Image 1 (spheres, rainbow, N blue to C red):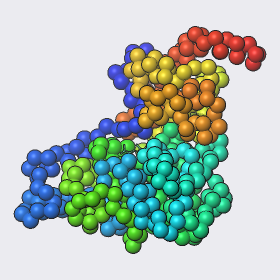
Image 2 (spheres, rainbow, N blue to C red):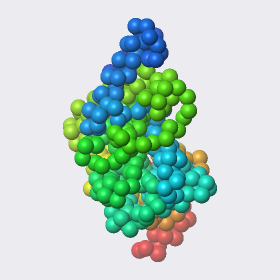
Image 3 (cartoon, helix red, strand yellow):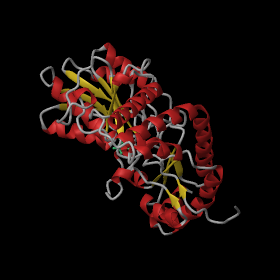
Length: 397
Ligand SMILES: *Cc1c(COP(=O)(O)O)cnc(C)c1O
């Protein structure tokens, strides 16, 4: 490959992933030949219904759950909204206190913000410098009027994986419903819902090489939850609307493939990740790793460069055909630093100088080496233009 530029290096797999060929192949017939509405009574409808149930079984197997505990939705955001708003509506008579963490995705945080406006009280658990929620802090935050705890399984910006079994165990022991946003975990690290005592879990197909616009909410058997959308009788009356049959088929296939290949693929990605982290920290001064070195998603690299603007770096990387992200994809376009980076204690200027590279199934070692070659001169170029850098380096020496 030499110094030739690669056509495109896609290191933004936490934002979304390409659909795998095997997944698309399984979906295609459900757009044209097998287009029946699963609720109808003729035979092509039966085929659609069967395909939805096969996907439900596949996803249940992937999570070690029961097929009856899987409800298909339009994605991670809907699953998150449903779990929180549906629990709050159902349990408002029992209490109005909710607990979450300071580093959740906006699909969670903005629901809690709205509930606060409607008279609920929310405790936002702090995290430590690695982004971890403390089980002891959770224990202390629970009150007699606490009706829901929601803590994400793994963080989308810094890749920190929470001690979710401990957190869910505490909630279960205290009789408080526990939800987890597992959108970044599902398909990437093992999830076992017979072991983890979560009552609800959200996931989204497009984060593990499935299609966009389809996801699921796991609801443990026997647990009450108010519907979020109102309409027909689909999904046992809990999630109305004609099923996204091709999407659901793609979700089931992507989940089955991801789980079958997980041991090998997660080891491969973790090695690429570590090569990138070591290469960046070792090759570029005034740089630190965001998040935990060990309790980390296999595909997440997040680093803070002092004295540069993450957005400027992204533009320079784009000119080298490298797709990356600064803090969070969802906040780009806003000038606020990421709430996650602030919560782990980064000062504003370092939060602004952060870069996230997230790896996936199609990334190679060559691509990692390409980034390690291209990145240091770009960082140096931006720092050369920064008066703060020149002043800062002088005082550091
Ligand atoms: C992507 C993401 C979501 C939103 O999922 P969509 O399917 O895009 O709505 C929610 N939570 C986390 C942690 C995510 O990374």
